[in-house]
Image (cartoon, rainbow, N blue to C red; front, side):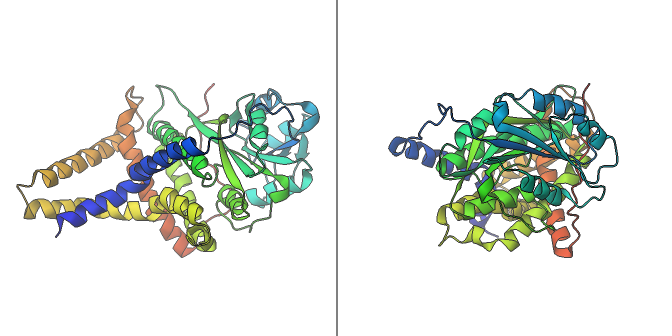
Length: 393
């Protein structure tokens, strides 16, 4: 066994999280020197916007969502709201229909989120369609920042920032999820400045209505496919950190993993149906960003992480006096020890949340294998099943 191969494996595993982040940041700094970004923030010509909210059985959150929507600061003559509550059999349709200032669309039959979103888009005649989940809450000036971003004609999609609402009383799931999205937001900012963000989170994103195209009903990750199809047309996805979508964390890691299994299966579905994403000859920058930010995180890193421990143990047996090998084995051992501890204390309201990060990271990589297996078997459910979220009074 070769120590050099082991080091290369570590570097490959670290690439999408550490090395690409550093490379991207350096490239962005260089780009700023030669091509400073034009400031579109002073635009006062707000575009017409439709806020589209697909809400399935959201009676727990819908009243707060309606209140939040009414508090959004945007010219009323350029703003409309569409709620689509297809398939809901709780009080969600009844609650929404009581607010006549909103357009309410409802079918008794549940046909999935994609069908609901498509119906809503067809109802819209605005320049911009903003997609937002029913259990997320926007900051009051988010739509103004989104509109300003579209002042750049090269921007076809705007991705907002997702934040997880958590406090000291929360357990492993919201703590790990919150840390992940802080890192992901930083990387999205780098991607966006470098060339384009690689997809957008479904909690909040916006597109030019004219660029919308219907996607297959069996698509698992509707937000990812809708936004990347716009990139394929030659437009960019702009990350706008001032357009904030906040949501409560999952009630448990088990609930969060249910969501991640589905997302993982959807990632591989997107890849196999859209090989252009790795076409470095036709889309060199996009392919570089997609492979670095997404593909290696989905496939390469989880696979390598799975073999690093046994490889490291074997090297420690062969080279017992090698300080580097022994140190790396100890560090790996400590990391997974904290993962195990995180599993057993995940429901405790610990003040120090960092102990949950190794556990969340480990479970997220396990989810990639589960998602890949489900995709291969065709065991995926395209109907939207959200993870149970914490609801604070």
